[in-house]
Image (cartoon, rainbow, N blue to C red; front, side, top):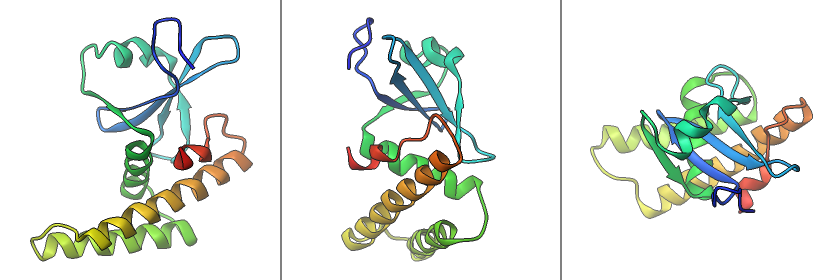
Length: 145
């Protein structure tokens, strides 16, 4: 969908290292959702629209849906802790990345595929939990874009 400014929506960004998405509304407008570092859920932040779209006064980087999913899960894994299958998968990714850093090397193609696959999976799992909890910004379908 195209917003009246020519912006194709949905659009995905990193704003000061925080994942942000801009989605179309039914009335032809747009809503801005920023990932919360305390809950992993989405906070509506429409006040950031111009700053992000016009890259005013800050670090703004656009992302593909695939990159966005990876960024969201890296962010959640960094800021959140807890119990359950999502957090166990975050620990699996951490172990792979820690080994890379400890050994002073890059991830192998296989390791990179594993990390990306786990992050896609945890993204869907987390977003589905958010939807069940009533988070209006949650959208697990981004991982299948």
